[in-house]
Image: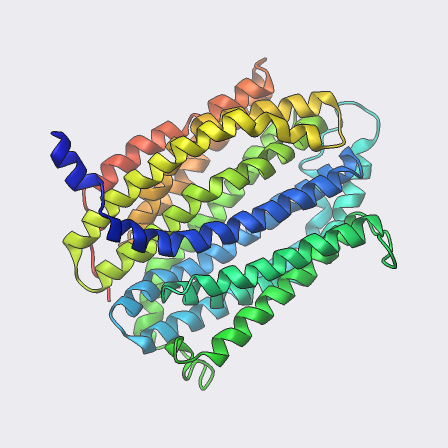
Length: 463
């Protein structure tokens, strides 16, 4: 391919990137602030000790599955929401909002029931006492304390996601960003005051970290909901949203048929990633602590490709909803290339500075060294994750949810989880080598994603 042809196909003009970044930057900044506060929260809990940090990290792994289940529930309707908005069908957009709200609350109810009845068993899956010093029992106690408070914040999180995703589909990404700023600022301040007992506040430790997060989630939901209902001119889908509670059978069937594989995919993928972490955990509590540090830091850098991928689904979905298939294909090519390019730069930065972060934690040198190695591996794999993630959102924007189900969660359970299980339990490889080989399975997804996107099976107008 000649340079001119390459530039025409894969490089956009200034107006294109302006539109793309107008959507992406608020989402990137919002998630950067959120992950930065999670990072600070993690450091503050880490100052309490390895057992406290490990107990909280395990519970956050379980809540991660819940978060992805909520994401899947709202994403099921978001496929249609973006296309309805692109077609200016506000009533259809309203029905997609109702579906999000109902599905998110249903998932939340089931999750709370599971956590309250089986929380100790779920946490214990990640605790292997290789040292024989009883540290795992201490970590379990802290984990249960943290989980007992965190369940109170699941409902506002679910409702907030239903509103925020619909707002983003209209192109208004600034409002969720501002709400997130206020929430994470509150979270950071309350973390400091409640974990360490500053001034008149009691020293609550792990419980303080959980309480700060719960309060912040209520603050964020309050801001989003109040703004949405006070600006119905910009959120036309809210007109009549609570006048009735039904969803027409045809719309409901379409969302479930297209959306259920997506929701199931998110749950199974998150459960798969959690299962992979459980496989690593058989190597000891030190590995759990090292992974917690590395994951928290890696998440700060991953937001670039995660949010650029999310924007692909919005931009391409709007083009598809308007019937502009060639424009959708052209935009998708340019956005994928831009996402990978950005992540090559971010990965290089992560390799350079990643090793400094573990030194902040109050833990052993062994755990710090493990975390540094895990961060380096994640940086090397990041550009490949960027491409496969962009491919996933490309396929999803055209409603190919069964294909994304196979591409994402089925791949995770057939390839990634067995690889982690076998390598961690039945080989003499060091845990860093095991981690690298498991992460390298992403290259298989890159090859599959490339073929799927090139096939153009996702170029479909659904509404």
